[in-house]
Length: 126
Image 1 (tube, rainbow, N blue to C red):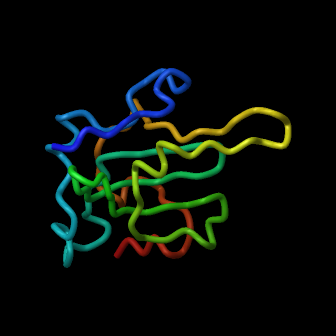
Image 2: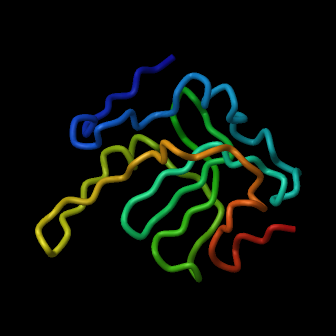
């Protein structure tokens, strides 16, 4: 398995990438194709200030995930692919002088998408 570098582990104060248990619980890419969206299990959640990523599938080698993302504007939220290494490296300087980084939700419990209160019309939980 490819070892992914954590560039901001010290600042974050916790592991960014999923644990082995979380990886085992997350289906590989395309595994939930055809499954009703409401029934897809969201196994991982990442967040920063006003942005969130909910992951339902993951390629453990490349750390490319499929899930739902809301980058601040619920009307623009959508299902799609995300690179966890790109999220891990993200470091944005806020106008007030502090840095914003993406964190893994350490308190997230896997659950169906229908129970995640996903924002926006594109969640389509039918």
